[in-house]
Image 1 (tube, rainbow, N blue to C red):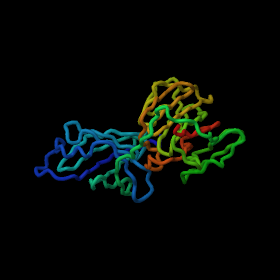
Image 2: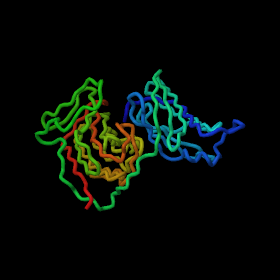
Image 3: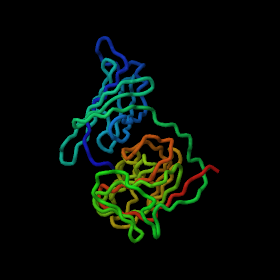
Image 4: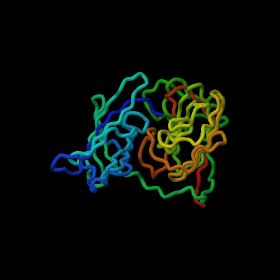
Length: 321
């Protein structure tokens, strides 16, 4: 649910050359590109991105790129491999019709990708690697640990810190309700967590928009879409990754309750008693503050998209029986 933007990208993956300059999509040696990659900036301040490639070395080349200039996963446009280089473009239009563009170049280096992205006259370099392997599964072998009240009755903001800079709004915890004013910084829990069950009650106004970050890497969308079809960018989605099975959103202004279980990469999301995602497999979303998926991370609360209120935020760590 990161701010709407447009992204046009050309990705050049230099993996050898074709002597005649013809497309080489059918070269079986190109299949090393296939699969998921996470992209980490090595200069400048940029959140992780995620790249998915399929069909390299075959006849149906495709892929997606996430997080380079906005939160949505965008499909490749006109991908091709020429002289051992893969090129593609992805686009996203702003609501007012404007388009932002960025260009990227990357070379395969051993088992990594190395590249750079230029946008609006600024260039950041990044390294691509395979996502971390996580063995834990939601297999019934987990027991409740000691619950942690992150915000509840008589709570204050001592369990939270501001993550971002440059926003003008603020958060307050008066009356047992945690709420923002203006375009407020993202809040991050002081403590970091691994496997857990999370209970969060929230309220949004009409057309409200927010998000909850799990381990600081995976965004559960909060959005006023009452009465609309469930969608990959709708309320309760793993944003731009997994759509809810149903839309269980109440009318705006009412308190609503999420119960979220995250074990390894297995994600279950229940909203107002309805199961939206049942053991879905998580991947990075554009709310990620790092790509270290095999490590514990904080809970995030997004406050830069307009008014949102939270209460009764309780996390129960899960421990192996």
